[in-house]
Image 1 (tube, rainbow, N blue to C red):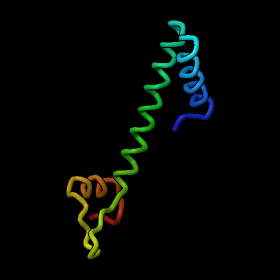
Image 2 (image 1 turned 90 degrees about the horizontal axis):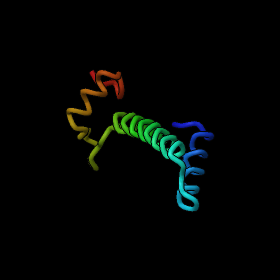
Image 3 (image 1 turned 180 degrees about the vertical axis):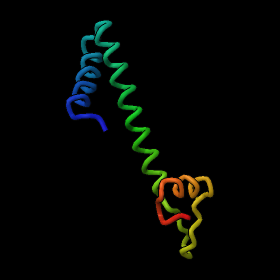
Amino acid sequence: MLSPEKLARINALAKKKKSDGLTDAEAREQKVLREEYLTAFRGGMRHHIEGMKIVDPEGTDVTPEKLKEIQKRKGLHNRE
């Protein structure tokens, strides 16, 4: 995830955009920071989803095969 300073800057720029508007330099900075945030968010979400094991109410592993293959490559959930 992004540092607290970068998150604070993203929020400050968003607030300034609503109240006063941004300069060209600030708009470019905002775009770069947002892309960095989205990249980090997507990576974290992918990591979270790839670590999931799906089990039905009877206790049977019903994790999709595609996800099982990813977990096998990463050595997760004792997949062999």
